[in-house]
Amino acid sequence: MGEKRQTEHTQANAVTVELKSSSQRSQQKVRHDIEMICAWVSFAALVVCNVLAQTGVMRRMVKPQHSEAFTWFVPARYTDLIWAVIFVFAAVWLVRLGNDKHRARNLGKIPASLLGILFIAACVLQIAWLFCFHAVNYPAMITLVFASTIVIWVLWFFSRRHDRTLWGWVPFSLWGSWLGIKTITDIARAVSYYLSKDGSLSAFGQMISTIILALLLLAAACAMRWYMGDWVFGLCVLWSVLGVAIRIMDTSKITAVIVIIAETIAAALMYLPWRHLTGRLNSADALSSAHAGAVDEQGRKSVESDGELHSTDHPGA
Image (cartoon, rainbow, N blue to C red):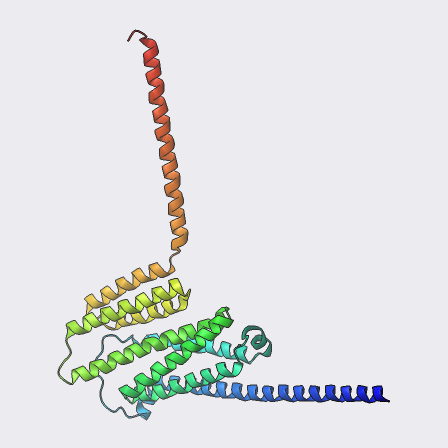
């Protein structure tokens, strides 16, 4: 009887544990579904707001607080087409995040809820930034776009660390790079506006600042390519800097040409297979040196042979 009661008690405990485990899994599933719904809703809202912004509807909806000063370091409007690519990559990432098997395999110790919350926060911050941008509220829009950039790069860090596939980190590298460029251009807009209150801006000052900003961005892109292995950041920088050069071509051709030359050099440094080319050049140099050494050795032996023949023909010399 005692053994029977003990067996029944053990079975009851096992059933209780199983029920608790099942309940926890069910709660986690519900929480995950809610997080994914919130993420998709916030992402859809961001896409809609971005479309309204690009088509000019948002500018008519939000009354600007003041006029803008002409700023040289701003990419041409066509560069905003990159948002379509960013949103496609982000949508694929969201689909993968919602996949239970993918989360269990690739996220490791990083909770999916953390990634979901960060993603939602980035979308909300960017929506707020779009409204502030079209309201020309410089302090608010700089703060919001900077915060959004930080959140996206945190997502890049976690995703790149635990998911080395392209779909794991490329969306946030592209997104974060473009938001970083938007942060710089928003700061440039604000500086130009506040300086223009004291009079017209110096063309020379705009030229120097544009060249310096372009060089700094290109240097950062090279550093990301060489030290972090992130080749997407460089593509985004090249796209934006080219947009700046095209936009100011009619304003200052010399500035545009300098920027394009610097961009070409940076692109070559980032994307040409220098290791392969260097290895080929080293091999060619080694082969050439070996061939030259063989020719020199053959010439030396020929001279020595001629000397021996000369001494044999004239033994009394």
